[in-house]
Image 1 (cartoon, rainbow, N blue to C red):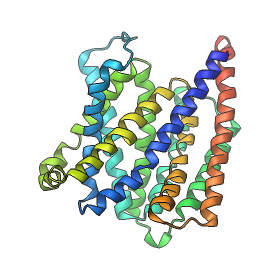
Image 2 (cartoon, one colour):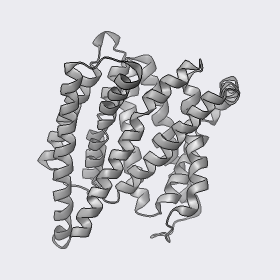
Image 3 (tube, rainbow, N blue to C red):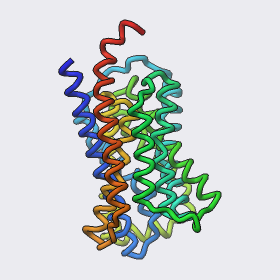
Image 4 (cartoon, helix red, strand yellow):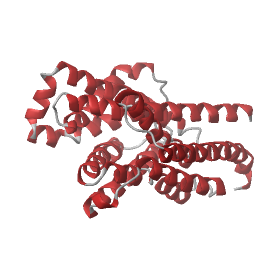
Length: 311
């Protein structure tokens, strides 16, 4: 039981690390834009650099035999779907939501993802609904809304759909990740997912080769793209997926709502952005949601061990 508890809290720490790394994307994005290059060029290269880093690091990941060996083409089809939906479409939809509607609304819609994760987890019977999870989702939505301070004046129906789509694909990444980790080792999952996720941007590279050439000819922009692929992609997603072995998916998704809180702090520190009382209140609500979900999730994780014989 103590080992189970230890793994749970190590998993929570890994997700906090992932949220911290994801929160640096705003800083990197602003630095990239300062170089005068369209941010979509950096976004499209992000999974490619992550794939290359993970491919080189593959030997250090523990390997295991597939629990339920599958037909090769079925395995490839699964990872094509996983990479295309959970990486390519997710990145594109969030970028479109930010571009078409306000950044504030895009952020709020993205962080409705814990609701979708909870739905998938309940349907898959990975989790039971607990009061603290519902309370955590409500508190996190309120907190993210206060941090974002969205403007309805910039509302766009298509932007709204893109934002909801980004939340759904974000949740599907968690769902597919949980399914994949039941069959394959972490290194295999990461390499295949980001390999196919990078391939999903191939049409963009063919249509807009000038943007890629621009990045390749600009050392600073190329370095920022690489850093995007290293920390907030390869390392963060690796930590997040590893944690799904030990932390309920809904709790994991709720902890990740700390990302906009941390992102707003970086904005204050590096770009002298304002930090209002509403931002502070929103941050406290999100932090409360994370604490409630984490403590409750740990208790439920321990209960799950004793419940196995009764299900």
